[in-house]
Length: 146
Image (cartoon, rainbow, N blue to C red; front, top):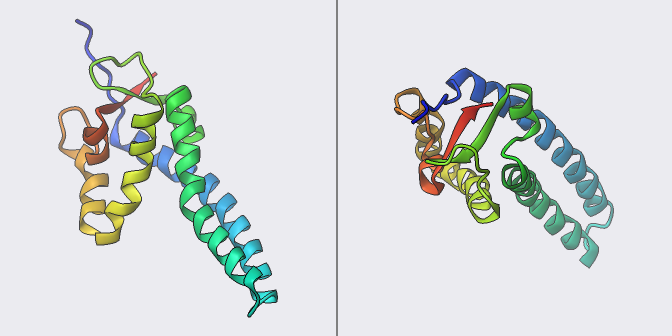
């Protein structure tokens, strides 16, 4: 059996930072534009619509980006730049598929609502044998070098 080459913590952090810049700047621009429309139409039903769409984009935009990237090839732009990929634990040649990818992308923001679970999640790879986060463990994924 081949030894699995798990991604180092620093590689994961660099990828997360790059993805964060890409995803959250894009989402931020869209949200800012919608917020301006909401402000200009204050008091009308359109204001509520623009505000609601902005909130949906704030959560759904990043979740969609990560879900599609992980399901289709296991790599976001950040992970591509670091030559790492998300794979199924036990079958490191196979991407996650859409259900696992969605869960992997959708759960971490909720962990941060209580702060400590979010912090534990991102620090967990520092002492884990497979260098997994808690959300990796939840869906049965690992991050490997490619």
